[in-house]
Image (cartoon, rainbow, N blue to C red; front, top):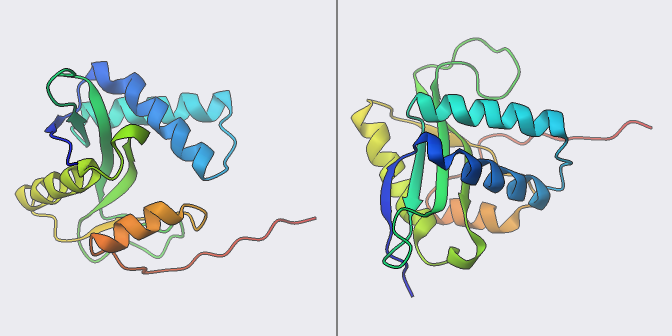
Length: 161
């Protein structure tokens, strides 16, 4: 069953939903969500909403106005990988977070968010979209590959003793 949604830019009232979604993503990625980290994520989400860089999917009839998913992004020319290789060749959009409420997953909400995001990128003259997906999040990897995303870089990690 496909879930009907209305897509829009986020409003300040959506902040708590976005932060809740980020907490769920961090849990899936097995990253501890400290108070300090969540405060920083809240600050960044609030700034992204102000900059019009968060899309929200609202629920269908019976839940009008209630968010069921979101996609946060940032438009930049900074090197996207955290290492200073200099500026990227052209402006791109970096997807920071994308989230759909668990009961709505697999019903087209994420696909609709990404379709609207691509339209928004075209309106802004952005020709490339990038994101990262943690290896532990197999469902997210499969979803993004289904949308046409392909790996660009592998970052390896090792804990020191």
